[in-house]
Length: 256
Ligand code: NAP
Image 1 (cartoon, rainbow, N blue to C red):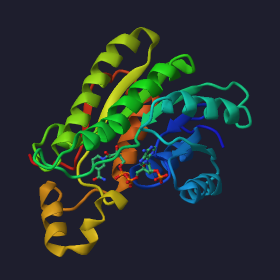
Image 2 (image 1 turned 45 degrees about the vertical axis):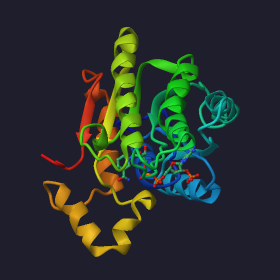
Image 3 (image 1 turned 90 degrees about the vertical axis):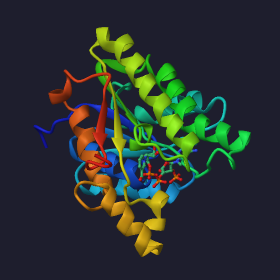
């Protein structure tokens, strides 16, 4: 197949085994990229995503990449280097999508230091060091896309630490964009609103909560992972070469 937007590129998607990451991995695969599908525990889910990408005519491989511990990013790249040669002769990477994230609810009163450290380790420290160690592998003209959240903009004290991780991620995006501009690398955040994934399983058990969630968006529904994947695919493409250092709102017009 020729003429696909990301033909000849390699993408890494952390947390590609489920939810938003899965939709991103499948979309980038359909657009022609070789996709490394990162996962933490759900090996079978990652294998399913790889299979789905291959069935659609793309190329992909599963990458064990649990994050949130010291040395996680170095281990991720070591695993990547071991596997990438089987899928592309050149090695290296063109698109890094820092998607893996955790979000436990805890207001300030119930937040523990352990909970705070855990959410920052996965949502902030891991992307920092994935990029730091990935820069030698990331080709000029590449893309870094950080999956943030509308909660960096919309106050929700019940998940204050989580929202703060995404604010930190957006500041990382801003600084990194300036640093990597001379290499033609764009860096952007994509901020989803409420999206139907395993992380938001409460959407399915509680009608009142589901109705509220739908009402937050100007479109009157919750987001689907594919709604986010389309925005990521645009930022990954050549058409987005002049967009950098921004937070692209993909909340479906939430809390306008
Ligand atoms: P999800 O359905 O819970 O999926 C999480 C993915 O991340 C899985 O692939 C999981 O791998 C991986 N993961 C979880 N913990 C990890 C860890 N410690 N190390 C490495 N990988 C890990 O999540 P989601 O809802 O799609 O969220 C994806 C991103 O979007 C997150 O950054 C989240 O903050 C952001 N976001 C989500 C929403 C929403 O409403 N869903 C809204 C705004 C922003 P395994 O399958 O191996 O467990």
